[in-house]
Length: 314
Image (cartoon, rainbow, N blue to C red; front, top):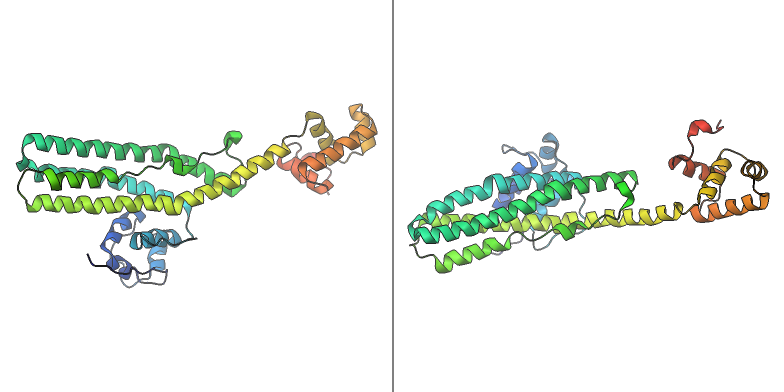
């Protein structure tokens, strides 16, 4: 096999150069909604005309083109990458695997009904496994990731305040069994060699490589970013836990503080001593790590303990 060094493409490179550099890059174009007929336009121009985030397109393209040397710290949009992965799932389950199945059925017809049944049954089990895996990502993982993105962008916790699970724990390899099928046919298929059979084996090889890259995109690009967002939210959970450790009495004192009452006025309203109110005030500031009236006011408004309309702000 010829060994060659694949280049790292940039936004200024011609889209035509990218497409012709590696035939495997054709598989990703439709998943980004990019048609052929790109002329002499740059990658950046083509992406802009098709409403595609250029950084995400380049991250995927360069990983396709250089799977053995993935780039570190690549910029991309997680939301756009999820859309690409969902379109990839549709490509595999609705088009690529059914097309291979049809070609395989015709190519092994001369090997006997028993062998044809065994090979097709193996392939059907594999295709069902792929469909289950991808459906699980579409129905469970990707919606979770979108909630995670929203929480991360807003600096808010996920609903329920539960620690998020790690995306990589849901990700399993789905390409190994195709290689096993190739080995079985090459070693044990009793029929004679035909162009149809060799052609479908070639298609299976290409599909296996494509699925390997699909998994690599998730492992190398998506999983680290998801872990980064999850870790950030876990820290928020920890900080939020500290904030929510205020007792009911301390929360009531805080509300009076941000409304501008003095320690003496708070003591009178709550039937406490001034000393007790002062102790509550110190505890509140230590727990929240906020030591200014303005900071306490912001905290109380953000956490909906008071509304801005309730405050005498001029």
